[in-house]
Length: 142
Image 1 (cartoon, helix red, strand yellow):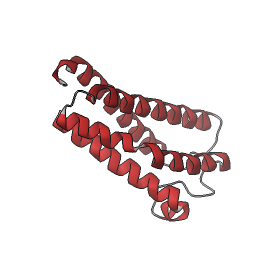
Image 2: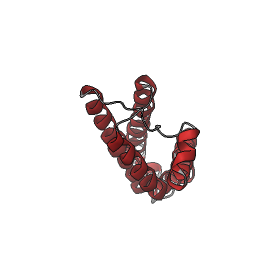
Image 3: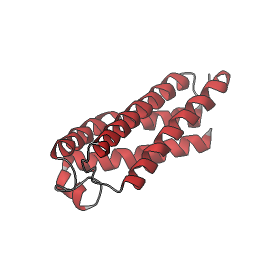
Image 4: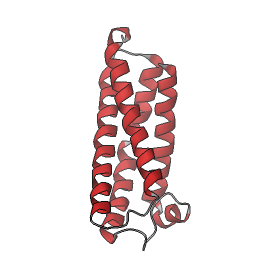
């Protein structure tokens, strides 16, 4: 479980820190390559990215709690872990669906599509694997 805890901690640090920078100073995040630049993406998707950065900066703390729950295995661990997995599945799926539709309609998604889909596929795999792993070992908590 500790390896999963480290993976969730890395997901938290990368995701939350990147989105916090984006929420506070979107132009700096664009300069550092954390966000799409104007002219490379549909303007509506750029607004969506700005709004998403603010929301992610507010809610991704749950991933840190998930990492701590996996590390310590407290009795409240499974509900927090399932919440984290659900959030990751929902947001990754929503973003994948949105970008696939944008590509299908000829809209730019800003990032290299192979990189983009690889990153979000990794998110989906992490969430599904964690859900399965914790579900099969739920008796070890508490």
